[in-house]
Amino acid sequence: MTNQQVVRIPPAIIVGDLAELLGVTAIDIIKELMKNGVMATITQTIDFDTAAVVAADLGFAPEEFEVAKAAADLAEASDEEAAPRSLRIVEEGEGLTLRPPVVTVLGHVDHGKTTLLDRIRKANVAGGEAGGITQHIGAYQAKGPDGRIMTFIDTPGHEAFSQMRARGAMVTDVAIIVVAADDGIMQQTREAIAHVKAARVPMVIAINKMDASNANPDRVLQQLTEVGLVPESYGGDQVVVQISALTGDNVDELLENVQLVAELQDLRANADQDAVGVVLEAKTDRHRGIVTTALVQTGTLRSGDTILAGTAYGRVKAMSDAAGERITEAGPSTPVEILGLNEVPPAGERFVVRKDEKEARAEATIRQRAIDAGQETRAGVTLDSLFGEIHKGNVTDFNLILKTDVQGSIEPLVQSLEDQSVDEVNVRVIHASVGSVTESDVQLAVAAKAVVVAFNVPAEPGARRLSDQEKIEIRDYRIIYDIIEDVQKAVKGLLEPIYNEVQDATVEVRQIFRVSRRNAIAGSYVREGTVTRGARCRVMRNGAVIHEGIIESLKRLNEDARDVNAGLECGIMISNFDGFEEGDQIITHHMEQVR
Ligand code: GDP
Image (tube, rainbow, N blue to C red):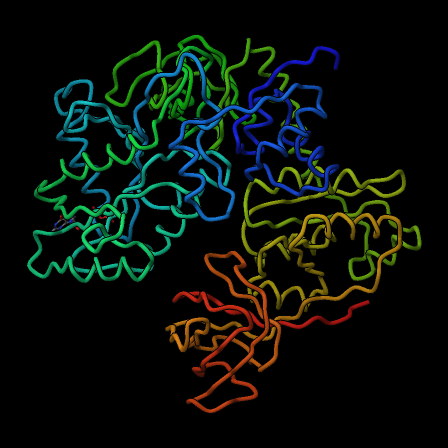
């Protein structure tokens, strides 16, 4: 590149956003990072120095600029885990105006999420009361008590929240966690809090059902403290509001607090540019064709614009707001219903504006081809000897099934793995998805004669059984580089002996006993297999590995035990780890040489 285009990069930026900023693909960025020894996924945040090296390598002249202080504080206050943010972090400079906060409601089932969303919608809906007709388009806008607009995502629960996040499209600015005062913090409340924390989204706790006769808000406050959210009334900084979604009591106060929390983030966007946003939901309607609900995150979407979302594209033929009114323009944080796409895009897919349909179609075709290539399966390989066959030169297709912990890892991994193909050996990822290895993955591996690569995810017991039975290899990895290195070696026929991980026990953590400042015993229940003292183990939470270590101490009825069988309770201590939470899983395992 000859012209040294100046790019202004914030102190921290998500890989995907950097790609967008530089106008290259995320794969390009990830490859540059790899060259510099940095392994990152599309959703990971990198610092300015790292981003600057990549930008410079790609021919840009990087310049640092300060993001809004609030955004930086927020990033600092968060845990280490890199998390996708909405686009606002890269938006700094001229032409920025305040935009409404986007609010998501999460919490345990039956704690009143839907009732709250309905209450807010009915009492405060923006854009007129339209004779009581409100359509459900997945999001709506309502006025806060001071008259300012707020955007609510109308699909409560963390499935939607995490689905978005998994795709690298974080839309939520503030999360409301609803906890019923008569029920307290439950499993899904904990999960919701974990998801929101991991995504570094600030939250407001709504203790709901205060009208119920058995409401016990003090217990909820206490439980919040136990999960690390210390309420303001206890001297902490967690905003908590006691409401009744049913009677509407204090709901205005809740909204005021949500606005305050949003204000601290100084949410701004540049309305004066092409729109970028996220698909919230989409469906086919018999009369209207493909109906897509999307949230404009930044810029302004106009009727007649051509948009591209994944492999779906088309001209925006008609657009309406959440109140069902026809509109021709939608600015930042506005949910819209769009007609005109050629196929149904998946929820969470990011949309962008393209110059015309020709350009959008070309890009969609390339994406489609990549998908088709991945799904085409070919047999002809004896699985248990795949690496050996490659060594002997009998194999040309090396099929892999890839399972990862986050959506963002998939694209770069597939690309990097397939890049390992050489003339004689074709490396193909025939299926890639997020989540633990399931029986159906193994079935696919049997059918396609493939090896299953599990990146930071466990295999379900059923999948393990089937893989043993069918002699399908499930290879576990934690580090991208290791996968690539192994595949490279396999392709070159240089692979070291293969060790397969054998799982010995699945244990559920039910209660935590703190024995000293740095030690905790996990009161546990052995669900499957036998736990053995000294065994290697990993601690899993919400499907992700949070610690790897060794079973340091194993007790049964307060006596030291060498092993404990399925169906029994036991006390477990793990080396260098005391951060157990109720509901964690401990998996013990050992390695066995299979070739
Ligand atoms: P969701 O599963 O979290 O969406 O919960 P819903 O909004 O469907 O509410 C579950 C049940 O709790 C329904 O029967 C509601 O009427 C009831 N409910 C919701 N909010 C309140 C409240 O503030 N007080 C009382 N007493 N009941 C409520």
